[in-house]
Length: 261
Image 1 (cartoon, rainbow, N blue to C red):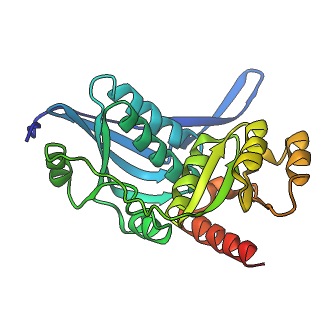
Image 2: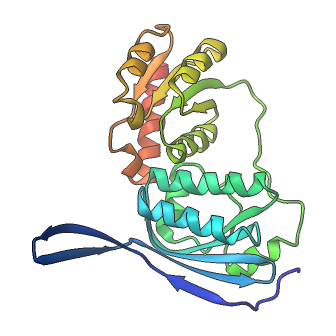
Image 3: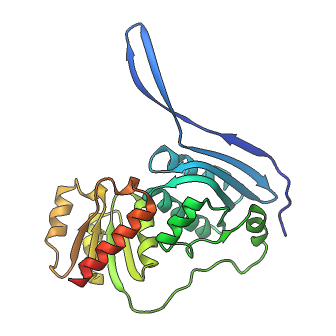
């Protein structure tokens, strides 16, 4: 094993301010961040312990910033999630993105001690096989010395194609992981022109437009004029902040219903 159980720890939380000011008098109302992160260097990897809610907004941003800061030294990360009480669609997408980014740069991300809530979400969305998951920090740490590294299984069958477009990279990562695990071939883009190009080239059965695209009138006009054989599915405005398990379950069922018509 290349890591020893020694190192230093650091914990912190942030606060978002909101409220109003008046001349000669200032009032501040502070809402605590819903996510607290504690990191510990153990040998040549980092353990990050998460407590609270991984949700769209400052919480996702703080987790991403913490990982980016720590991985300047080491690109091997263990996320300990025993006290994560809630995760929304964008939050789960952020974990998928972090996993991909670390691997693309020669590192890895392992999850351990999943809270019962988070375990249920990953089961409902069929994403348990996306991440390497371990029962304890020790097992996750030891796994870094046991190559070969985790690889997601691929079925190799011809699958129904779906194009997803939205302005949020985290939401697109969530949709991609969710739908691939439901045996769809998925193409994602933040660019409306690229989405239309993907539709022409890949000939998907479904085009999914996220909340970020709904206010883009020219993009929506183009999407509504595509081949009638392509089903257009619009996600609700609050989709990113919806509990990830329920959102994924409902979306997969909506797609199946569309494809059955």
